[in-house]
Every structure is written in structure tokens, then in C-alpha cells.
Image 1: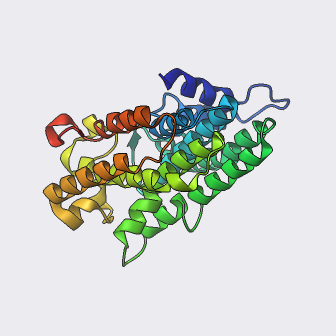
Image 2 (image 1 turned 30 degrees about the vertical axis):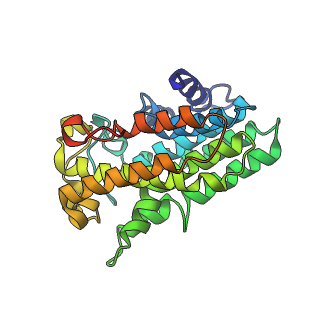
Length: 289
């Protein structure tokens, strides 16, 4: 299981251990609050699963990449919940960061996690600086603009929305980063891994759209019905509930068949199936075969 490896990697790099100067305690507490306890750690799980499937010959570099990616994800959640975006009061079943610590601290939490994520990979670069440089480049690409989560957030302010582009940047970007960074951390060409990441990301966004309609806050840990309240583009409004479910099944089938040839291909396919079957409660979705 990769769970303990992922959690240890994140705990090694999130915090202020060994700092020579005193630090703002509220910001430190808020950063810890935003990352621990985490969610399902799906993105770092995918990254390390791909790394293992490709040989995982420098585990410390893969660990750094996984931790950095999760830091970016956590930062995006903190910013996404802000009053200027979703104004969400809860996240992961507890008060959102801005709700508990204030808006200015929440902005600094997200900024700190984003900035520090790149440093985490840089610190792990000794064994292979070229791979580390590629990892930093990929993480930057899928965090910023025009291919990253910043572009995804910006689509929500547009009058005419390209739903596919919105899904790929808003949610898909960090899944593409996960598959490509996993391959790159093990010395493999990241390009063949784009489609797998894109399909997984699109599936998670469609599933999230369905959860927003079908499930309560108690079930998801965050406010329900937010897409309608905030008039955001989503798969349910575009295809209907049944149409969105069918689209999700089609995406997931394509995701498994898109896995590039690698030593651990079979085990990786099982991981994708496992994660896919967790997307929606059983009563709403047939298991992926």
C-alpha cells in the first residue's frame, strides 16, 4: 500500500521544522489544518502508482513529486473556497480555512503551499537534476495558465464556456500532472501518459458534478448544490443525470485502455479500476469492470 509512503512524504515537507527564525503561528497552524488530515490523496496515489509501474528507481524523487502535487491540490482547495470564488463554509467535513482563520490567512496558506511545492522537488534534485527540472516544469504547466488549474478557475467567470476545456483544466490538469510526473520521476517519457491523466481527471470532474446534485453535505463533506448556486458549468446541466452517468462510464472505460505499455501495467489498471469505483456511491454507479 502506498498510503503510509504518501503520508510520510507529505509530513516531511509541510511544516516549519528546522527553521532558524520564528514563524507566524497562525499561518503555520492554518497550513497544517489545510493539509492534515487530508482527503483520499488520490493524485499522489496515482503519481506513485505510475512511478512504481515504470520502475520507481529514485523513490525519494517520486516521493517529493507526490508531496508537491498534493500541496498544490490543497492550495487550490483553500483558494477555491474563498468568498471571491465559492464562498464555501466547509471542506472535508470541517470549517474551510477562510472560515476558521480568516480570508487573508487563507490566501497566504494557498500562496505558501504553491511556492513551497516547487522547492520540495528542487531539494530532492541531487540524484537526478534533469528529472527534477522536468518535474518542476510539469507541475508549473498544470498549476498555472493556460493549461493549468488557474485557467480552470477562470473558465467559471466566462459567459461562453468550453465544458471540455473547463473540465480538463479545472480538474484534469492535476491528474495529467500526476500521471506525467509519475512517469518522469522514474525516467520515462511523460508524453504517452497524457491521455490517462486527462481521462481520469475528466471522470473525476463529471463525478463531482453528479455528487453536487445527488449527495448531501454529510455524504461529501462540502456544501451541496454549489454548481447551481454559483451558476457554474457542469456535466449534469449539459447532459442530465443519466447522460452524465453514461459519460462517466465511457470516460472510465477509455482511461483503462489508454494506459501505456510499462512493466507494471496490469497492477496500474487495477489501481485505476479501484479509484474509479470510489467516484460515486454504489447506489448511483455500476462498478467498472
